[in-house]
Image 1 (cartoon, one colour):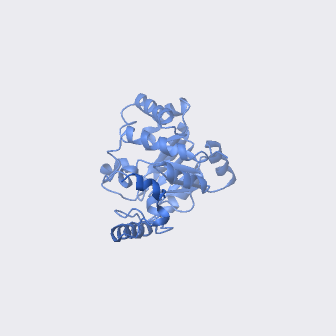
Image 2 (tube, one colour):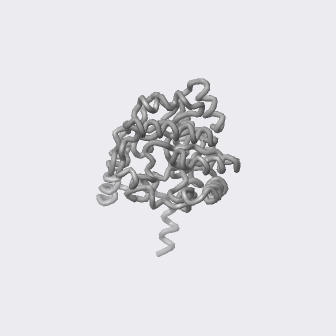
Image 3 (tube, rainbow, N blue to C red):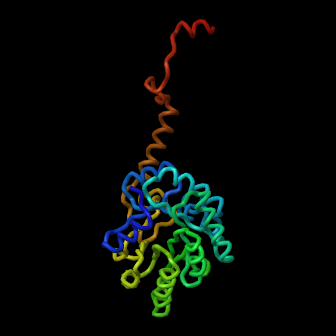
Length: 275
């Protein structure tokens, strides 16, 4: 059964935990979809894990649409949420609605996600009023990494904690159906979760959130350029892949692959007529 924004609302009401993972391609999306994960985030983290950028700032609308289309084809059951990239919504409310519409029409998204709290509430409201579901994102917002001075835990001072609570309430009031809380102390995330009627999706915010999200390359040990404290490695797929690639290289070079069972036959008399 297709996961929708109503699935998220019902989960919050019933106290059922929600699961979300990133995906950026068709084959990975199929595997995640078949695993029963509620939602797939086509994150602008693709800039890091797929395109090799140092941050997410260089990711474009065209990048997001390209990857979102592939994921949507492989995920008929998961709710596909697509990140709005840097400067696709900060310039004006009009631009925000237009670009959110592009992600829905061209990228086949089920919902969009944008970073920020009170400052982006008007854009969230306008996008929601246009009939597009919005997932908000507060706390450590990677598109603002230069303003933060790096990947730093957010909300540790009284003033910063109060601002995060205001941000959470603002995005809820603007019509967001859920909010991602990233790199925030657990007790603060717990408090925000209790104050909101919409689900919170934690990433480095503790188990008290209504759901969790991780970058799949992180949790499978496929990306090692930087590993945040909040990542748990559920499998060491990166090492398995590396070993397989090495074995392939060796077998091709020593002539053991391809073997007879990997080749196609033809009658010898046909071959003889070709000489």
